[in-house]
Image (cartoon, rainbow, N blue to C red; front, side):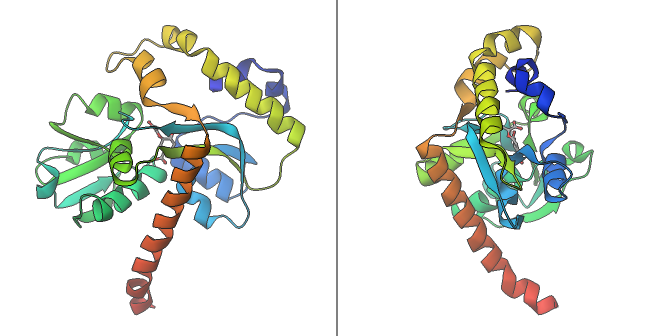
Length: 242
Ligand SMILES: C=C(O[C@@H]1C=C(C(=O)O)C=C[C@H]1O)C(=O)O
């Protein structure tokens, strides 16, 4: 998508900031940006939100770059470290641990070096290129998009172009077209970014699925429902401390 945006005429209308997902989420919540390719899990925290255009970061099955990694089978996991760069996948992990794997390990926010602590009964949710690298380190790998598909039969949306205000329709149309151009040029992106840990061609064409189609929107709605239920689950505990 970046490939398309940087080369489109719409690039001159925007200031583009590149950062990892949890930072982009904070920027949108603080109104430091108008729109971002933002983790969908922050939607419940937004007073007003718009999902713009027809492109997203999604997966219909095995995503490869969002996994729970461990040294033991998941049944033996006692603690899960959550990637500080993520907002959606850490919530997806909570949903899946409860609804799919039906275990309740302790969940801990990971620090910058959290991957060094994935050992023994301590697992970690890792996202992005660090996850593609972690695939070569951890013997047990549980793909979160694959588990979501097994639980719900639906694809999963990690991030979408979310704004905190209504944006100009012509701008969104041009921006959407820029995204489409990016998706059409995946081969160029692969050629320009040699990567040793995983086939980026397979990653972009088989594991990620960029179209925000009806099935993905359905998956997104269901995920937001699960998040609401999890919040409700937590509220009696939180109330006790008030
Ligand atoms: C597929 C990925 O999903 C990312 C995961 C996100 C999250 O967990 O908050 C947000 C944006 C996505 O781009 C990845 O980083 O590999």
